[in-house]
Image (tube, rainbow, N blue to C red; front, side):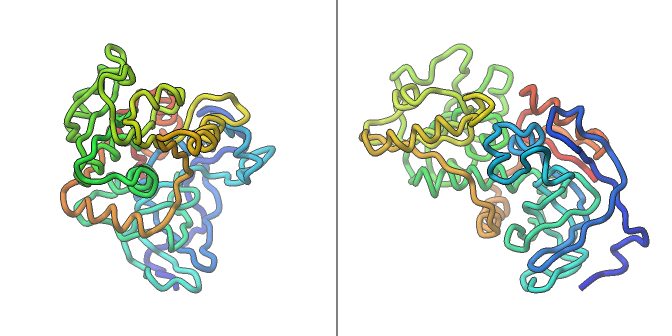
Length: 335
């Protein structure tokens, strides 16, 4: 089904493209052919897109293990980057039953840094009415990862103490709010310049990692979410109660071949041998999580921390800021 009023006569669109792996200099703005929705998919008029660390990894092609896993060995399989998006459904493919032309949605798609993008129906939810397109676009991947880390992996319960390492970033800014909404006492770790941000997110306590050691054993926690991506396993365990849980979310060290994956795999192998539980996971992309997140948003317990909005043509600059660690919370791209 197609809404002719929503599609321009030309079958091309503006998009950010790249033909090889590399840094932000590989990205450029071009006009390319508009994609078409296949079975189970919808075509979305993108109003805004979001940046996440995973999109940076897909841009650089590192760690190399990702290429073997299917992102493209010699070069990127998907020419247009970007996954988080918010916009309006303009075409629905066969088999689509939950969504219709004209629906405002947010979720995870392919090629979000463009005027139009494709997304599977089972990775989309209706946009919360309280959020702008820019706010909605920075929610899906980061908030869903935070939710799964806390609930599926961390099994957080009301009254527990939770430490969030890397609390000022994309996933961390959601983890602090969700942990509070789920009834935990939250301690947030961040740099000096970002302590005010994590306080505004509702953290009960804050730790400046440049001045204080969160793993000195003075305070132990029921659950530690490591979103910083590089503390050693022994360091994480020092911050845990004797039967506490540490959840590793991503990882930025470990070399070009496996990146942070080797630390995650070591955690899984060590966990059965110790009293503490060490978990590592790759987040799932599913509409059910987005619908649950929408509930937190509508209840007023979760708000996107939007640092800055860039126009589509300035995606390379936004990527540079993300890579340099200068982003507080999330960055959106307006299309």
